[in-house]
Amino acid sequence: MIHLANALSVYRHAGEVVMRRVGREALLVPVRNRAGDLDSIFTLNETAILVWEALDGKTPLEAVVERICRDYDVDPDRAAADAGEIVGTLVEAGLLERSE
Image (cartoon, rainbow, N blue to C red):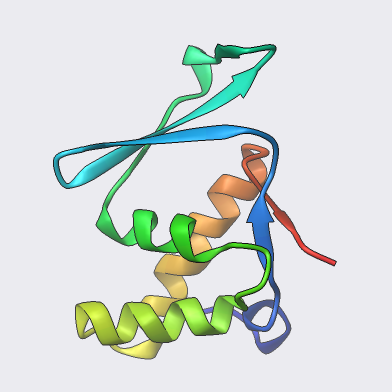
């Protein structure tokens, strides 16, 4: 579960990343020096796509969790755990960063 301090955090995309939808999934490809970094491609499921698109540098993570609950009819603890895992993975990969 996301702690209150983290739930109120705001994240934004870090660097230039291209997202391409493929069916019900999407691929995130970091773009470095005008070329796709094929070793750093991430596959996103529907929930991860929602999180990625919602984290625009203005929307708090808490609002994203609420949207997951609403769109997928899941309980808040499950939505917070899923969002926290997605955000943690993307921050670790350098694709998301906390906004000031």
